[in-house]
Length: 112
Length: 117
Image (cartoon, rainbow over all chains, first blue to last red; front, top):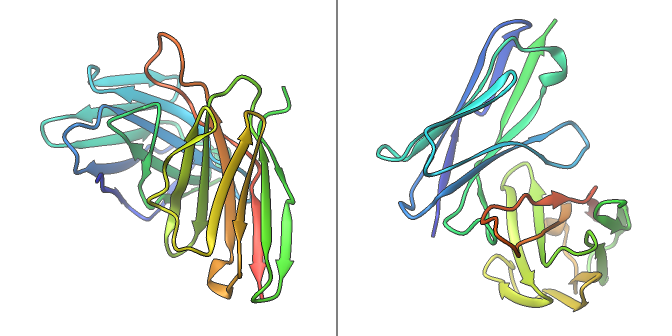
């Protein structure tokens, strides 16, 4: 089955800096890669996703890149703000209508 | 729509007791997922249903865990007997998998925080 590794486990940045979280996956058949944000005590919520036929996708201050050859994908957050502080999870799946395999999560802290 | 609804939000029970967690998916969604979240193991998929039918239960830890979906608007996750290592936050999520789009966001409920003493 799919295995997703996520790094780093914790990330601390100053407000205004950029943050990058990286994930690798094992199943070459995976074709859908969502990112979820979970604030303390809250539920995970989708913030951005990318499909295997796209190399990069942007939505305001967040972007995701995908390298299918290397089987890794990354989340980029620019101009970080304190409200970006949360746990971020990457996921991968060969079947977007079914099972997602999540990474272990990255605790992002943005210091004012 | 109120989103995915879970009950109870918090449950404290003693080892050996039966625990039942409940979930109401978003109306019209045809996929339902049960996850468990712990610090040690992260976010794990336990089981998921499509049109009320269990599709993959390979994540269910052992026979003490069972899940049902008797209709499109209700699912339960039962632990019997419960053990302290079952303490975790249990999330239910639903998605709409039918249609032209192949990629469907999973909407999570608020979770049930289970503590087994």
